[in-house]
Image (cartoon, rainbow, N blue to C red):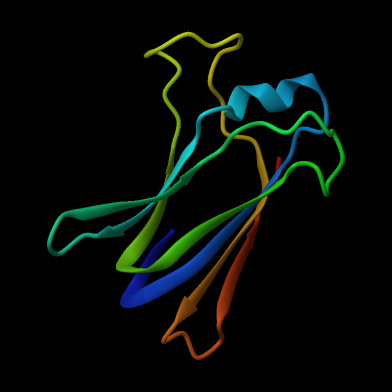
Length: 112
C-alpha cells in the first residue's frame, strides 16, 4: 500500500483469505513500513500461522509502534529456509491504523 503522504503507523491487521490448510502458504510473511524517500525499511512483524482456520483465527495483528513512512509492504520468501508449501499471499483484507491520518485507518478488501 502506497500513500501520498507520510504517516506513523500504529498497527497493520491482515485477514487471511484461506481458512484451510492453504493458509500455511503465508507462513513467515513480513510486514514492513517503508519510507521511500530515505530508503528506511522498518519491520512491524512476522506472520506465524495459527492452526485455527476461522476468520478470527486467521486474523493477524502487527504492532508497528508508530514507525513512519509512506508505504506498508508485505513480503513473503519461501525460497530461503525450509517451508512445507510454496509461498503465496492470500489476503482477504488488510487494514492499517496510523497517527496523522485524518481517517485513522485504511482498509483494502482483496478480490479473488
